[in-house]
Length: 326
Image (cartoon, rainbow, N blue to C red; front, side, top):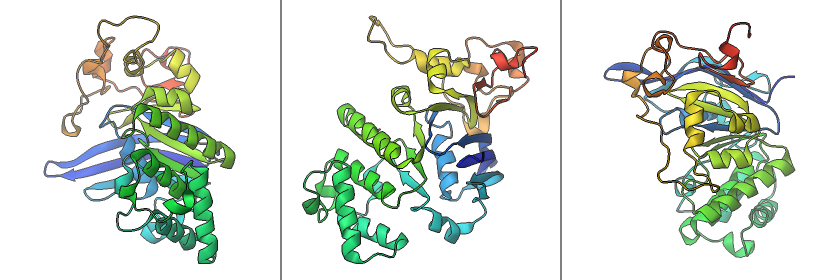
């Protein structure tokens, strides 16, 4: 069956005075209808850039230079701005990290919701406002009739993010790109927003690409996990399998950095080193300068991710890179 979203060999370059720098390198994955794919990695791994490319929102100096983006079997990376504008909203929704940059500070919450609904559905203004009120109630905003006439600055951070969720779901999209949707929120509010997003997706059958650096959010939300490092996918698999037995040393480092409530920690584990700069990517496996299991081969040859469905890891020590394994 054709997946809802299929990204095939995605390449994104960033033009600079030093030439074109490859920020996304041959990234391939898919998302089934109703599935939550968690994309995780450190800042600079390429997670947000991948989501932006899917939404058709790359801006200069970033440019998609190769690969295909397929939505329900239809190629969308060549549609142009008008074609993508028609898809954003009724087919692909977005939830970004900071709701203040998503919401228009000069318009009321209700006006923004009504405009979005009216743009994609030929309904009278009264009906659009009624839908907006019901959406605010669904996302847990108290006194929705009053909040329709509130401006974003009059709402708390958690309430603003709930409004962003209402905007993302108001046109009943088939796919949501959620880029760090809880990072700017308090921990207790994070849990509420994640649970709300899960419920809305479950009720509507909406698929989600959840971009985050938080493995705890992944554990609570995702069906499958895709781990990114230096612009490439390094491990993909079902969430339970990745959490219990990660194969790539980078994924193991991310897991080890999560503090356990079951034992005392004198100090937290950290992955030594930092993400390489785009103009100084190492040869072979990009993670090898930081890898505790590095071999001589790692600096010469780059292992590939053999199965985009998972479980698979781009590591010479992974099971699917051992002799006799496909």
